[in-house]
Structure formats: structure tokens, C-alpha cells
Figure 1 (cartoon, helix red, strand yellow):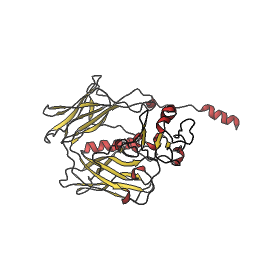
Figure 2: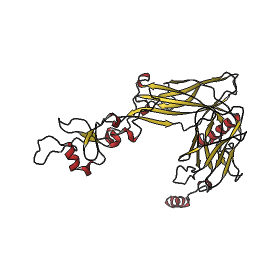
Figure 3: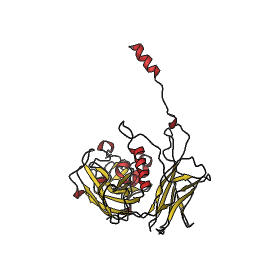
Figure 4: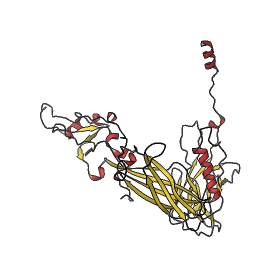
Length: 389
């Protein structure tokens, strides 16, 4: 058996499929042409090899423009990191439009001309606390209808925002020489976090007599999530799709989210409506649609939810409190008043990585802990969003 085991181990060889090291780097186009008063955002990037250590590969210094079938052009401005944008276009809905791309390497890409298809308003964003197969939690749904029955294919995405808190409150800050009390703009206990949808959310009323979407699942928030610790908000955006655009997203969803088991669909070619005019055989990933989106936001407070207990971001074992580190007495005066400023000047090198917490220690001094346990701005912002209420 020992000989057989050695033989079997010796026969094992790593297998690296050609696709892992394939040199191809294909253009990826994300975004929609907004036909209304809202801005248009387009993101360009390149695919990376599975074996690559680089996770993202933005396409920089490209020249983008929206073109109409009447030869009117609307340029987009580069905002860095592969992002391009232009202000509200207020396009004529009776014409068709396409996206033109010229990369820094003089490669040319064009999307097909597509008609303007505006999304109907979102009727409501609803929720329940029934949970799902992943356990207890918050289910978010979208509801809409098109009285004209002109839109039967839909897509949604969302932006989440929530309040979270650090483990401890710090009311003091050092400017390098002196310990000062924090003002309101320097507070690091309450912050706002945010996240965007990462899955493809689509729906259709093609098999219904009327274009009515009722309780279409948008996202699920686990009951233990920090997002539900105080107040949670979600803004849902809705897009109207053509049949071709809907089929593109169906195929993309199958290839990116529904692979891994023997019961899932096999990978297939993803064909969008963007093409390379420099090299017609080059694949391009993306689909450009034109239309006005609709959106709606809701707020959910802790008081509206069951008695769920969110998991602490940092357990006590990872956030110890040092109760002596910030006590410094003048030499030869062990029973005098602690001198905070003099301590930091005297022992500044030892101060690195520690923040003060205003917890009294036997009437003298302060306690402290690590920045990630005290400073919420390391994971969010202490600036309240303009839409928050």
C-alpha cells in the first residue's frame, strides 16, 4: 500500500487550462446612456487573466462620445480610473443613439444604434423580515407597472447606505504635539457606510397580460449584518430593456452567477451590441441601452425590525483597552496630576497607532485602544450624506 500511495502521489501533475494564461485582454463596457436630465456614466476596463495578481484593469485616456442618427455628438469627460461621464443630455426620444469609443491605442469601438426606452416610475420599495434559506434577515422588493405595456423587460441595481459605530468613543485627538478635544467635525464614533449591488437583477412580464412587477426580489440583508445596527437606507434604480438587452443580461447572469454545480447551465458566448471596428473578430463585453431611469429610496430603522443582534465588527479580544498607557507623571512626582500633553511629547514614538478614549481611570488619565476599534472613518465617512434624513 505504501508503494501504491507513493505511485499515486507521483502521478499527480498540476493542470493549468489554457484559458488561465490566455493573453487576451478584452474591453468591458459598463453603463447606460441616460436620455433625461440625469448624468450618463460609462466605465471602461479590460479583462484580466485568472492567474493574474491584478484584480482590476481600467481603460484610461479613451475618447468617448454619444452619437445620434442625425450625426449629433455628445462627448464624455474622463473622471479617472476608467470612469467617463457627461451631464444630462435630454435626448430626443424619436431618434436612435450609439456609443463611440476610441482608446489610447487608437482602437475604435461602436455600439449599435438603439432606440430610447424610458423606465416607468417605481411604484414602491417594500420589505419583510421573513428571511430566506440563508437564515433570518431583511428582504427588499421592488414594485412597478407600465400602464402602456410598452416596457416588458426590466433591470435593477441599488446603492445601500447605513449608519454604523466604532466600538469606543474617542473625544480627544493629538495634533502631534498636543492632545486636544475633538470638535463635531472630528468625531469618529458614528459613520456612514455604503455598498453597491454586485449581482444582475432582471425581470420580465412577457408572459403576463399586463406589465406589472410585484415584489421582485432586490436584495437580502442578514439579521446579523452591521447594516441593520441603527438605520439602513437603499436606493433602487430601475432600467427598461429591449428584448435583446434582456437576453444579454440573462446570458451574462448564467455565465457569472449560475455556474459551479452539475445542474447549472454550461458557459456560453456572451454577445453584446458593442463591436470593434479595428478588429471585427475581437470580443467586446457589454451592452449599451438608452433611456431614462427611475429610482426610489426608503429608510428602515432599528425600531422597525425584530430584536436582531448584529455581529460586532471587532470582538473585544481584538479591541483591548489599555488603562495605563496614557498616564504620565512628572518625574519625582508619582502622586501628581497626569500631564497628557507632556506625556505625548515625552513618549511620542510610543503613541503611534493608539487613540484616546475618554474613560476615566480612577479619576486620572484616559484609556485607549487601536484605531480600527475607535476610528469609524477607516471603514466609512463621518460626513452625513445629503439625502440622509
